[in-house]
Image (cartoon, rainbow, N blue to C red; front, side):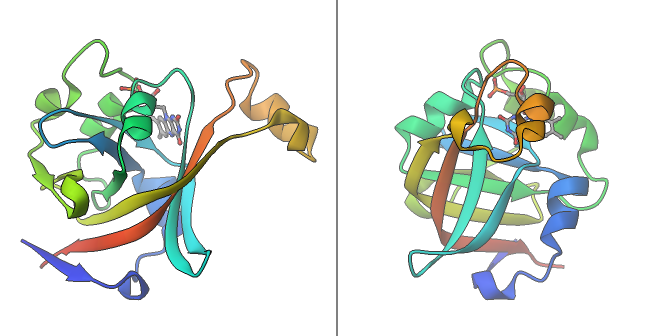
Length: 170
Ligand SMILES: Cc1cc2nc3c(=O)[nH]c(=O)nc-3n(C[C@H](O)[C@H](O)[C@H](O)COP(=O)(O)O)c2cc1C
């Protein structure tokens, strides 16, 4: 069972969540959605709203779902949990297989009918506010381009207003 909490009540260290646990970025509807593993993104405050941000490269199947949906979700699974499943969702494409079925995940509906996973420990449901393709000419440190974009596949960044935060009850 999940409990709804306020964004200010998220007491996990976000650097730990992103760097070590990773997250699933999911968009679409509970009946037709796609998910991918991500470790780049963040939470913050923008435009007088609590927001979450994630970045998706153009070749990801998930991009189409992000673009066609008003909501997306970020699901975190706890330390060391579902590592195999997160590896799979981060190396296989939903174009080629049903990753959600392969992981045995159960899809649930959050605010705005946004799909998330019952198996998660923490879910952040976001209402899309803004997107932008990263512009290589705006990088002030060319090292980032060399390191992260040898294929010139610049991410599309999405900022969503946090609509709901769900935390698994102990
Ligand atoms: C730990 C980890 C972090 C990742 N972070 C991102 C990310 O932030 N953005 C991104 O576009 N892809 C990221 N990926 C790659 C996608 O998850 C991967 O390409 C996935 O297969 C895309 O699936 P899709 O084609 O079904 O969307 C990451 C992969 C792993 C394993």
